[in-house]
Image (cartoon, rainbow, N blue to C red):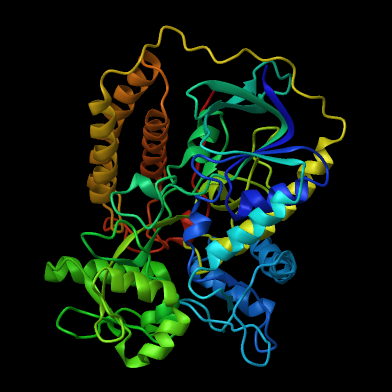
Length: 527
């Protein structure tokens, strides 16, 4: 028998849990996570949440900073809604028990990061995401209407192809359970909160779960996907043979960190008058340019002038992690490189989280609300998850009324699939997709590189598709199929945009073209 709920939430980060908490007031909620309950991009967010909580700040200034970082491609309504509703969501988090850093007078200790003209970053040391995730999970545990299913990977969305309205309605998802069985989950409302797709690139700050599952499933279900060419590369990931994907927070530069070449020379002022506080796309391209020019493997982030006591108090997790890798940031600069960090495009939604597929919502990094435009402003990501998780739950609850539970749907049909016996194909193709994306579709692009990527991806996707239908489904195959589809979408969107804007920089069209390209790049698969 299928599992039945009012709301099915795929993903357990800040957006999914915010949705679940609000939706639990209106019905039953299932939250599915691919690994443990807490394993998500949210857990690894260091810097904090951007919100106007100081008299020296204003909504108008936060809006202006967001649009400036987004290179003018932002949806003004999405920016306004997020900025204006953000402070209330922060207060609700605090009421749930989230502990944020304060000054001796009891006021929030607001930090500053690149692209922000004011100090407005609410933080919990340098593990803000972990603290938010802890508080949200604890609150969910107090709601009996919420049921978690961990180590459960959604394979594909279930569509009612008999829908009389053209676009089939989403009825739920087929899910691979930890037992190896494939279960049918049905719901009146299905919510994608699966985060980003950093694992589509060879080097990323993201955890292993970030394989673009939500966007890939939505694309295969016929949803509108937009602006996938805008993939943000965080300028500073720890460069170490032992460190897999450790992020060095933007907050370090916000507190006065200086980027230097290996010979000690500063370089950011040559690229932008704001220096280290320029938006991420500018800083990442500057580092990429210097590495290509010098042939070095990394640049240095120098914090030594700030003193050990301050660094330990403000950045305890980063300090201890660097020390574990043999780097004492109080006396030696940190070696850093850019790495894939945040997906600014995604599944197109309205301001209530609705996608173009009836019954399907998307919130958080998986969604393209228009908030980020062509480049995300630092610490607007957790903010977006909080705001739109809350908003989508309210809209979804309104749509719940009168909706009948999904009728019986066919169980998963494995067809003639047999146990896999060619796992090397999965491993090889996984590596090849990520490497070609890094080499051809990275920080700087050209038409020739994109064409090469497209040709190879077409072959890889055909191999993966054949493997998927011939052998029984495993989590590795699910994720490989998804990153290949995500790679295809990024290349498709990047090939269409004939300009450079924000995170999409191409040597063939190095200038911004507001006359022809001040618009979204939309891809939609015909069913």
